[in-house]
Image (cartoon, rainbow, N blue to C red):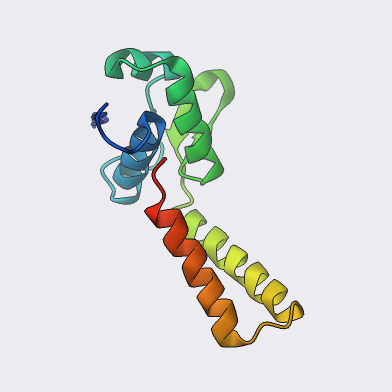
Length: 126
């Protein structure tokens, strides 16, 4: 199963984010099965015409998100924890709700603040 990534240098989204998003989408959509070995950072950088640091940044973000796991010299692989992102988001939401309550915000104010933060993050251009 080949990895299929295209990077648009004219896009408003940073190249590392394009790489990260496409690998994450293919992994979560089943196009890249659990255990699939990803190209090396240098190999993928060469294929895409990007700096190795750009691909390394994408791989680090994917690993932090639980999409891939790096096994030292053995390489990087699609991780098994398909629900990792959902679990982490739920934990962050619980933490936020507890903090908002301690700050004395009512439910509507807490939800409005969260909605504004999410909107700002998703509307942001990296």
